Length: 327
Image (cartoon, rainbow, N blue to C red; front, side, top):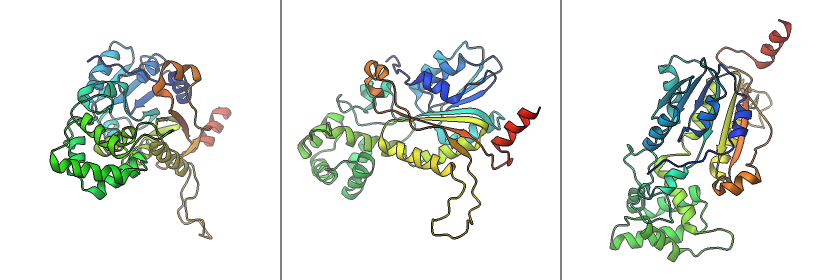
């Protein structure tokens, strides 16, 4: 199947990253390479694009879409948690910008055999990286009832988590639940649609997908790793699509932007924490026009930060600006 995915907020990303002609930019969620291609068109032959993605379909599409560019392009089939190792392998200490476009791609949703969509009957899979062994079928058929309830509640924010988990455990005693269609039928029977909540399978599928791919457990650490590799003045741009990941992004950036993270009841700061970033404005949403042409952009939020202090070199952004103005 052809890799179809329309990258969102492309112009906003270019503005957020403040792309420099000779810059080095890391796309931590490369997909088909839409954002990376837009960045590549803004940089010179001396610039560099580094793309990471764990999905083999995305790697093939991005390799084709980013071929023949004048700038240097390096593509790796890796999870973004591996970004320090990848940069080290390229002997790159610092970068000018990093991008995370979180969530699931349109290609993954629209490819039935991947098992991401509750609207298409297919084998239960949901692996973004098909080298992983854990599948959605494993989660649904082997996790005990309490564990399913926790996943549905924590990752899906589903109010009928217990009812759905009980129904799943009851059904799988009769026969294994192998397909998305079978799972959707169980969910529909256990939890009717609410007026404003949409189809309950949407939240359950989100929860199972997050569990299968470990999406949230590595996110905060990956953001911290990306910030640590930014140059002073370098930019970080993150697009989120649901409240769980956005909450993690917001809190991680907030902590990285604080000078002191001691408990409020401490009379004196003992953490010696320095703010590493400055958060640039409030979260941005796609334009109404973009949402009209791409409904999947509706829930997106873009958060942007700038590196202002490097803990390794002790370099500060205001000192750099002072040096420039005096030269």
